[in-house]
Length: 408
Image (cartoon, rainbow, N blue to C red; front, side, top):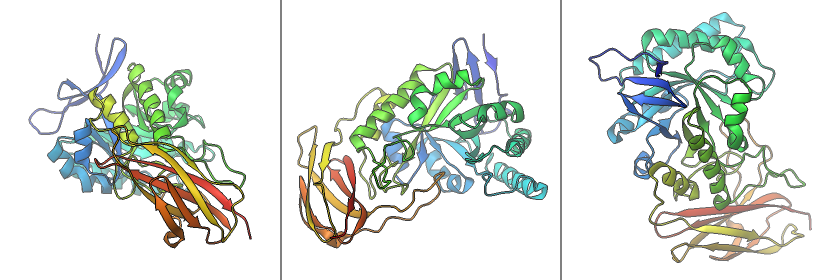
């Protein structure tokens, strides 16, 4: 038995016929009659051609300004787009102001009309975590449903709305106030490994996409005594990507696919926390993990493996410190290491909004080799020492250690 959840588009246009289907034991997205498991990434600054080469097939954007920038290239490469449409977060807009809510709706519909003839778009992504992180506001969800109802009058492609995890009763609000939506997107990091079970227990009854996943976030990892989040190395992070995607592959009765966060690099907590590439380039182990899922084959040349970055205890301002690194290349190639000393962020951001880069102290690096660095601590306070590790084939790894320098 097959149940069509989304009507096909009219014949005679270049717009793809995108349908969400529910068959015996699984859900499935089809594009022009062919199964299309979403092998996606969140848009970053890494080349989309590398996504194509790695076996990915979809770019997810958060706003139509991003879609405008990438859609021509996506179509040239044969990639598909989940066209994100930004919806103001509850703490940034008064959803009790009818005029503002209507203004937002009309702006969204104008974007849909403008983009509806682009054949790379397969899903309209209506909002990302716009519920905010405080007390739930049902008016947000009612506004989202009103937008989706109007979009369906313009275009037949599936709609999706995206939530941060399953807390704050998100699913019940969507079931009650957003009946028009076709797909639920869930951003989940540490919770991705149990998402399917928790989604069922929460009463989820629509197909889902794991719309953001990757390493444990700064809110999920242990903190130092001075409040610094302890970031995993890129080698350790690869296991989180692997376990999350395995959950998607295992539960095809729920998942239409996934979008990894983030295809590029981004300053969020640190310069290396969520990016699948290092700043300035160099793919990390997360790319290799996803390539193997997407194609069934590992890359011919694997990225470096990093094991440990060690610092002495009792560091004080003005002292000379030697740190040691343990890293290797699977193919035995010589590695190049770039060392960076940065000031720790005074406060981590929330919701993925832009963050300032932390001050860097290049003059503090006094001597370095691929396995060690000697640096001078410029002042007292909280810092982070980074090692960026590169092979000769585009592969990279990274590790950092936070430390606190006391007064001399």
